[in-house]
Picture 1 (cartoon, rainbow, N blue to C red):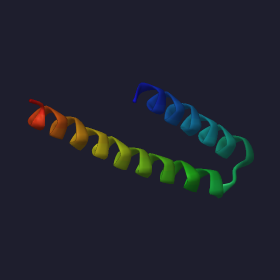
Picture 2: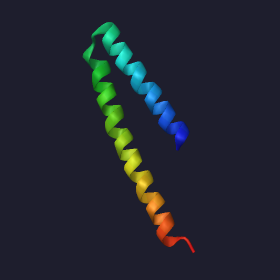
Picture 3: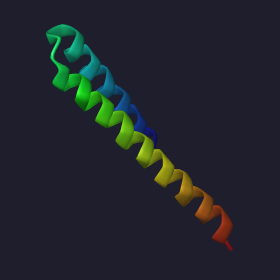
Length: 57
């Protein structure tokens, strides 16, 4: 999970850097999609951790 988080942060910084460097809206759109899907991934991981905690015997 930590590696995924680190890779997502690196990808976000690269996309923001490309947007600032080239001033192209497509990089900003990719950044927004990355943030949205990262949020979904975090929610799924949180639910799985809670379920693991509940059903752990």
